[in-house]
Image (cartoon, rainbow, N blue to C red; front, side, top):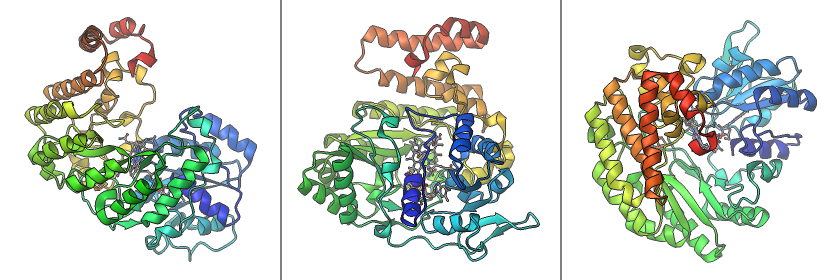
Amino acid sequence: MGMLMLAAVLEKAGFNVHLLDANAARNSKSTEEIIQFSRKLKPDLVGMTLLTPMVREAYKLALGLQGNGAKLLAGGPHATLLPEEPLHHGFDAVVVGEGEPTIVEAAQVLLGIIPKETVKGLVYLDSNGRPVHTKSRPELTNLDDLPLPARHLVNPLDYGPDNGEIHSNLFSSRGCPGRCSYCAGHLFGKKFRFRSAGNVLDEMVKVHKAYETKHFHFVDDAITMDKGRLKEICQGLIEADMSVTWSVMTRVDQVNEELLALMARAGCVRIDYGVESGHPETLKRIHKSHTVEMVRRTIPLTAKFGIRPYVFFIFGFPWETPDDIEKTHKLLIELAPYVDKFQPAIASILIPFPGTEIYEKYKEKYGFEEWWLSEDRNYDAPDALGHPYYQSVIYRNGAVLDADFFHYSTELREKIYEAFKFMYWHSLRGSNMVARWVRVLALDVSKRLHYFSPSFEHAVFNVIPKTRRQ
Ligand code: B12
Ligand code: SF4
């Protein structure tokens, strides 16, 4: 989405843009393939989005691209949090924060068309190798002025044949006033800014017509912050009668019965809630604005209107005891009848992202400063097969636990495992009861074997193909 937005702005300014989504589900590219591609294309400028867990890979790529003659520009969440770092890993400049207002000038700077000093929101090294931060760029205020993402630059087939969800991602607002202690969402700031309902509806109609998109997903952090505007979007969708469905992410304390009823009428079929914990003290300590009681009310209420609630949890805050984890596990069991699938994010174990309160408070105590630069904490290892069967099945739990950010005790790990096992058990709902038991039992067998002999576990479970594992 970010890349498509920037491409649209650059095209409007007359640049010839080529977009390579190296993460595209059906056409992903290795670092070596991207370098080969760049050698053929010979671009003047290469832009890259930096996310913390993949930044080491991005730095390897930058080094590989150096020498091809292209200037390298970085942006995105990690580059915004630590704008000097990419400059020491092969990048020529970094754009801080929202890219749209800066990208054209940044490109002109790197192509030698304009001087860099006067461009706001840019970080680069001076001739003595010292980092220079230009004046900061104010956040965009009128989001309706932005061009629509350059969706024509991607091949829909890279994301799946016959996919009703092609180009489903939309953003309708930016910023979140929340202050959750683990959240790395600083890029769009605390101030809630939004597109008008009409502007959002126009985009949905256009995308639906052009690509036959049948489901939209709003990537906004806080779409329910202005309920009046969301109600306008809902009314517009009801009137347009487009027969599309849509989903949002929001906070447990941000919805009510009236809003949920209207959202359901307008085609909302799923809401992702950041529930995070069933331990009341943890919710307070991470500055969530909801309580466990609110979760108990909101999740069934959402399901009552036919909207599927997806609930996200984070396990392993540094103060959590095995009993606290058990409280979260119990809440999972309580919510299960209303949730058709638990949705552990790629990793549902706490990761201390830079710039967060959690990172700052605990980096010294646990010695994980700048973990994203070291191989030891490579929790995002793409090959889940390197892990025992039980870990690879329960959503990469093992990989993050191996990174061992907070030095969890064996007892605590055991409780986390039990909670994940429950989520896995629940995800098998609908399948034959015997098959369900066998699959869950296999987790325990793998875990025990791995404890006694990792290589024996590997030999036994390696016969199960990867596709059946996830
Ligand atoms: C949708 C989403 C996902 C999707 C798709 C991710 C993707 N790669 O696009 C999924 C579910 C797969 C996902 C997964 C993850 N996500 Co996510 N995700 C989001 C979310 C909600 C929206 C992203 C989006 O489309 N934003 C809208 C577009 C317009 O903004 P944008 O992409 O940031 O781009 C703008 C700027 O960053 C900048 N920019 C971006 N790239 C570039 C490049 C250049 C050259 C320039 C100049 C500027 C620039 O300009 C753009 C326009 O203003 C954000 C939160 C948020 N509200 O942004 C989190 C967020 C990006 N995710 C985050 C994280 C941590 C993850 C995971 C690592 C989770 C995990 N624990 O493993 C994985 C990583 C997966 C991956 N390989 O990318 C963090 C990133 C923090 C960080 N320090 O890196 C965020 C900020 C959430 C948060 N609040 O903590 N995620
Ligand atoms: S509500 Fe969501 S986006 Fe906002 S600060 Fe908390 S975790 Fe981040």
